[in-house]
Image: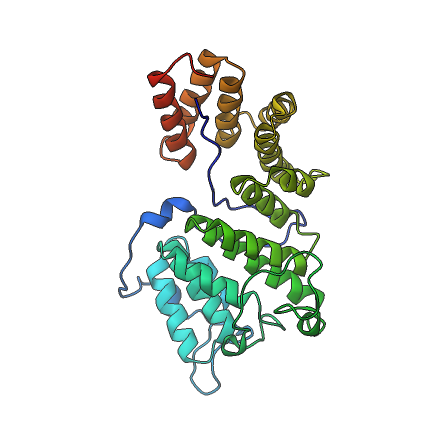
Length: 324
């Protein structure tokens, strides 16, 4: 029996360095639909006062906009946030307003459009002060060690500050997540690779790049990405699960089992680890243990992507209980 491998997941992770991460809605939002409506009272379009950030309110309008306001209402009012972003864009918000709008579209399930926008925005220099209209038209990710001629390459990046490079790398990370939700692994890999070129030490991006590499059949690349493992506890669990899947693809079942055991010791109720544990048990011919693992996934998170995969694996197991 062909075991189901861990699919593409959009996971809200904090960076290893502890920098603030904008909220990104997960893959479950991909099936959602949204239509514009009047923002609820107190929502982002109510115009938070205070100092405007880069690309904020136009002088003389009496309106102030900020990315902090956008972000604070994104999860509970994505429609209102999109309206806010559109209004901000009309008042000269530039790249920052477009970034806000892309996150709102992601939350509303428009993952393809959001991914394309985020990918383009990650190529804007001097973030967040750059003008979205002047972003490079080519958005394919540059490989590690990209030459100066690459879009957003050394000729552009030398004008950035370390802070703006990190910000652009984070936008590339969100683009990669959006491409994953859009079932576009090649574009996701491009965005993650480009983000790592901007900030080679971003461990969140390394884990994402490794996960996409496994999904695309490049298991050895994933293991390289995750050597050494990240120090951050949450990232480390995700990295262990990803490396286990990579070793499984390479036929290194014992190494994979060691990583999954470590992941479950650190996070006993991690559904991705439980799902992979079931796959490994199946590969070892331990069908009852595999069944128990997958049932645990469904019990822990019945509406999750991992639960859907566990149900598929259980169906295959019931159809042919003795198959390896």
